[in-house]
Image 1 (cartoon, rainbow, N blue to C red):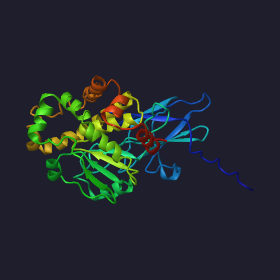
Image 2: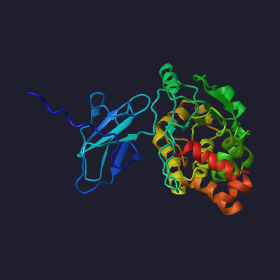
Image 3: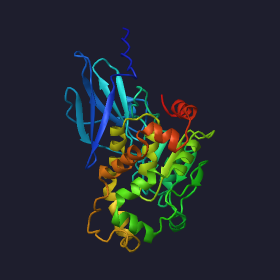
Image 4: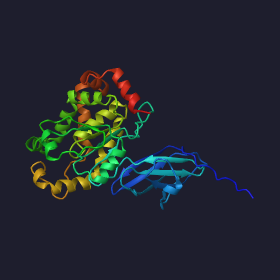
Length: 333
């Protein structure tokens, strides 16, 4: 007697998006037709869904979404939502898990104003790379990083040097060349909003970074500073806005640093002697560090000086329409 072959699992289903919150919580949500429901959610380390290589999550699924604690593993993580029509939608976890790097994440997946999507795996961001473990180095090499843009000052690079990662070219572009402890105390302690405005109006460095992204052979780039928050936050905001990501999504991306607050606080406490002059009020928490108001201040500076982001891009940075088109073609799908 012949057996009927099982129905194949389709690899494309309804659009599923993710929202992150504190304590490693994630919410997956979707819109489906009335006769299609989510039947199961799986976790795996592979972008392609294979039920035998995935872990079925024991969670409650609502009609249009599910919230649960992220069952993360080292490196990349994926969530596969299987629907009742046998289609599967895969969500890439933008947080990349490592032993020694804080605030490591992917800027892919954001939908732009023209309906395209930022490529996954092309634009990465993190805190400094000094404490990469051997396992981390292997995982980082698997990401295929071509270019590392280190935004730290010479002082910071010497104090916490980065290891070599595979074939990646490591370029130091000090985004605040004066970032020594005394100057950082002035900027951070007195007016961090002013520091953010000054960074985004550093048009020479912003233009240089955008043009570096167009260099041949740079398909995957990693941006980092010390904590992956301030200098990295401003640079990544400029990149995402140039690609057409809406401002509210750019602010949302900035605020994801909140999810790394535990690791960042541990870093600060372990190096208290280095940071105590910068953050004299540090008392078991990081004061005022993660507020969206800071990145909003930098975006307001663009509006105040240039009137719009397009004018900032073309008049302030000198980026041409052709260069913007090339960036879109390279980093959007």
